[in-house]
Image 1 (cartoon, one colour):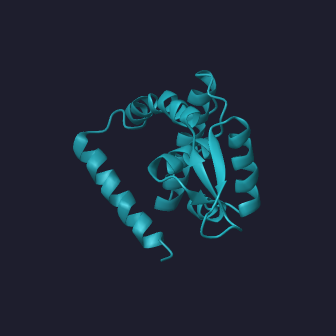
Image 2: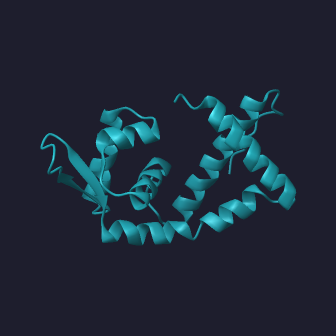
Length: 148
């Protein structure tokens, strides 16, 4: 696998971006090597729908920080694979709500077995205290950057 770190980060933001880039690259490799033919964003979408089914395309786009057109194409692909289904909203007939199918749930079970492997690889060499501290710091960074 190609190196994702080019140099030692000079700033906290640069370190976060490098870590996220490495995480995405490793996840993509693990998905590919396991025969899961999905992009990381498709996987994120399935997890979002597992947490709460019935999101509109606009809500999914907002959660993923993507434009609605991109999310529509992605949901079309997931629907073609029978991993999600869109149903017309009974309260607002202009809106379609997206739900995880049984096949989508099965796909998530296949993907979820990689989570502990990814966690172990990402935190190798860190103590429990360093892991807790890192999570706390990243929670604060996320809160600082939250637009709301």
